[in-house]
Length: 432
Image (cartoon, rainbow, N blue to C red; front, side):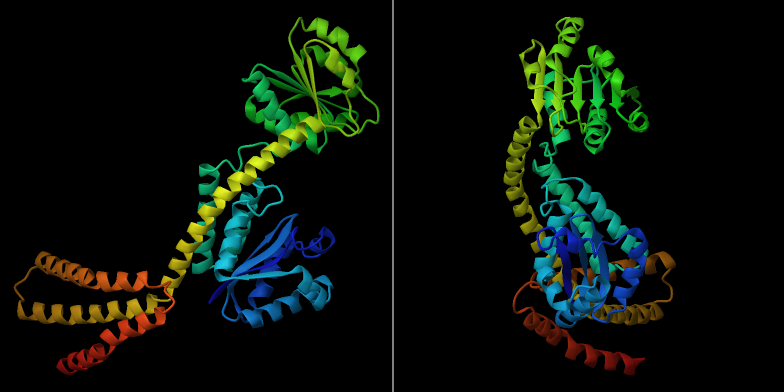
C-alpha cells in the first residue's frame, strides 16, 4: 500500500484553474463516494481551500491510480488530460507524509504560520471519517499530522509574529500602550480589514469599539459582532476625542482626517496620545497630522515593514519546524513499516495461544481439585511467560521494519517458527 498526496495549489496552478476543482460542502460527500469507486483507492480525504485542492489517501497501484485520477479530474473540470498534468502534483509514501505534515503545520501555506489551515485540515478529516472514507492508516496519519502541527506551534515561533496588516496594527498598538483594557477604539470603515482588526482588538480586551461607516447598516452589523457602538459616518469626528486608537479602512479617494481638523481633538484630549493606523489605499489620513504633538500616524507601508520583518522571522522558525517534520516523518515511516509485520507477528502469537490453551486444558484435567482463583493465577502466569518470551524477537523484527532487507528478516523469522508450528500442530491434533 502507498500513501498518496495529489492535487493542485497556489504553487502549481493559477486561481482560474484551482477554482474549477473547488469542493464545497454540498459536493464533498458525492465526490468522496465517487473516488472510492476507483479500484486503486482504499482511503481518501479532500482538503479544499482558497489556495489548494488536495486529495490524500491510500492506493496499492500508483501508476493505475494516476491515470484514473487524471481521467476523473479531466471530466469534472473540462481541462484536457495533457494540460492537467502540468498543474497536478503526485507525492507518494514518505514524500506524501512530509507534504501532509507541512500542510497541517502551515509550512506550505502562502502565509507561513497562518492558523486557519489547522481548522480546515481537521474539518476535512472529520468529514471523511463520518463518510467512512478514512480508516486505520489515514486516521493514524491525520492524528499524527495534528500532533505535529501543535508541536511546531508550541516549540517554534512560527505563528507568533503578525503577518497581516490588521494584526500588525493591533500588535503595534499593544507595544505602544501595553495594556489595552482601558482603551477605546474607533474603526472608520466596516470592510474585511476593519473586521479583522476588530477581531484582534477584541481578543486583547479593549474597553470599547466604535464603528463608523458610510453605509450605516454595515456599521451596525459589524458593531453587533463585537458588542460595539455603530456611528453614522458624518458623526465620527464627534467621537474622536474619546478614541485612543483609530483604524481607518475606507474606499475614500481623498483624506477624511486632516491636520487642521485634529487640532481641536488634541486639545480636548489634554495631552493623552492618539494613535492612528491608516490601512487604506488611497490613504485616508493626511500625512501632516504627524506634525501634531501627541498624534502618531502609521500608514500601510509602515505596517508592511513590520509584516515583512515578521515574515522573515517566521521563515527562520520554519527551518526549525522542518527539522521536527523530518523526525516525525521517520517515526511515521517506522510505524507504517511495522504494520506490514502485523500478520507475521499475529501468526506467532496465535500459535502460542493454541499451545497455551492445549496445555492448560491438559493441566486442569489432570488437576481437577484446583479452584477458579488458582486456575486464573496459573493462566496469568503462563500468559506472562509467553509475552516475555515473544517480546524480544517481536521487538527485534519491528526494529528491522525500515531496513532495506526487511523481507529477509521476515523470512528468517517465519523459518524459525513455521516448520515447527506445523509439526507441533500435527502432534497436538493427533493427541486431541
